[in-house]
Image 1: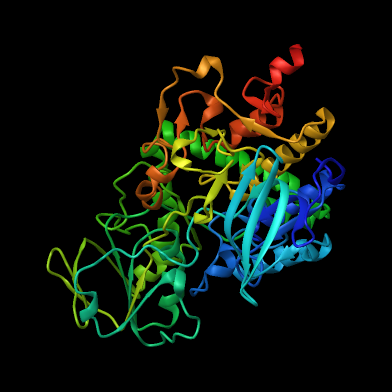
Image 2: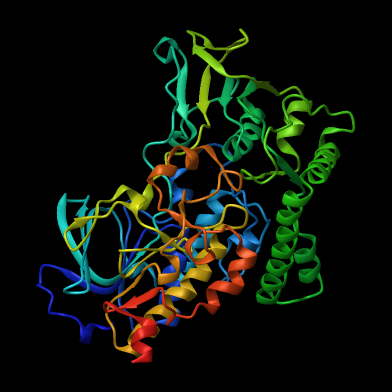
Length: 508
């Protein structure tokens, strides 16, 4: 798939072997792997924003930080040195080092909003049309392979429920995703609507300077409280172990612990909850009451487990800086909101921490051979490729483990696939259901009893379909995929190269 095997490209277009969409945590990591494992491939990164960072650039609310430990959220190839839970500023600094150390900046095209992606089986090329926002000019990139690293939510339009009476409210209302750092909340009464990872981050930060913070939640969230340090990493540094070794060993330890936690959440969720309570009491005191505001209605890990460094949200509650209210919102009022039980909550600033709007493939229109792609009509192959859509891979990370673990893993997969195609002398690859899959039941993208955050449930009908067999689902299980994905047989029956089934071509 190098330049020598492609058709002539008009001078007005830019041709590269690979286009990477997005310069966030997925796109930058994927670019590194492409450079490292396929050094002869040319590539370009198209990024809508004016800088790198993705979600870490979008969110600017007080206290914004990771909700995964950085030893596994950091890339496999670059050791993380610092506290396990890091601020957005620290993560952006880390990403900038990756870009500078590996010469990735020259490949990034900032301020490019993609408006169409079209694949032709005749030319075996993607045509990616974008608007360059600096001068509003339309620019065209063609490539052999499209690597979608744009994330999974709309960075410009967060989810805000249509609450009654919002026009009556005389205070300041803002969604956390659109927070303006210039907003001064010092000495103000702040109401945060929501209780997920964003609320868990922003509430302790508000509590430091606000007069008071109220958290209004429909349902409580599970929290994991711990010191923001890794004792194994600190000990290894103390005895003089080099950082690459520390990074590798600590990652292995954390992933082992996470695997055990995930299994226990499924097998003995009540016992896990009791242990989580014990960790909370280390910071909030032995007599801390969990009912009704800190006892979730769902099983542990059906939604993200919010990390709570130093028990900060619970300490805010114990110190009287935070009042949790578990209820539904009936209406906004002039001074705040009224809940369904009739409680009036007054607030100078109301912050909606109500989550995302799902964005499938960046809401970009896609075509294959002139036909529009409806992602909900495709079947997803291991959560990364789709039936009927050639030469494309989508990075969707993990929810129970660090997102970046899958970035590294799929980086290896794509590079193996590209090198395999070069060795076979083919220009096109796509996945297709096998004969044995003819009667396979097609189901929603993920089981609701497996993982069911609101943003995903709201948009599930937009997502690709899942099959009942392992090859045709995204199982969200890193510990299983780390063995399965590196050992995928690229000549197995589900892979179609240049229109021919790999296994049939081999037999011939």
